[in-house]
Image (cartoon, rainbow, N blue to C red; front, side, top):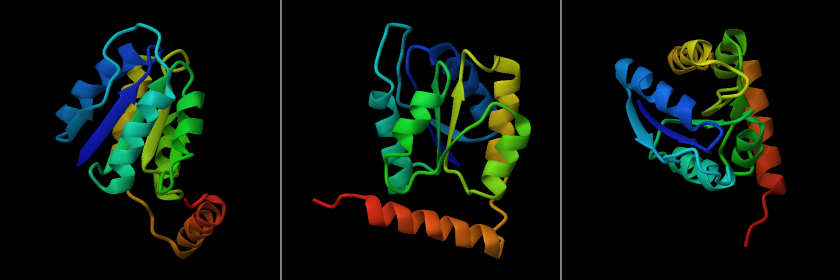
Length: 152
């Protein structure tokens, strides 16, 4: 699996800790920044990760900022993205099984590296259940996205 990852300054250290664990699981990582703890704007890093996922160039994406909230909001503006803010293992599992999330967001100031590595592992290893009720809900989300996306 190809995983695109990005972080702002508030998530830089956690991003650096997560990358080797993703690679150790046998996945390819595309690191889209940032590359230091200098202040940057999270939408500038959410966009390239989400573009990779939405286009199919990456199978999944991971975004990290201070809380994960800003990255989640920015990511979910991109058509085709279902970004879930996760800080526990149960949510990591269920957001894949029920919501078929394709982008994971976490907050470095909320979750430590130990649990973050477990969240990433759980999220990457959990498949979408493909149950009819979940597929129906995802279809409805896509209809909302299509209805409210401005077309040039």
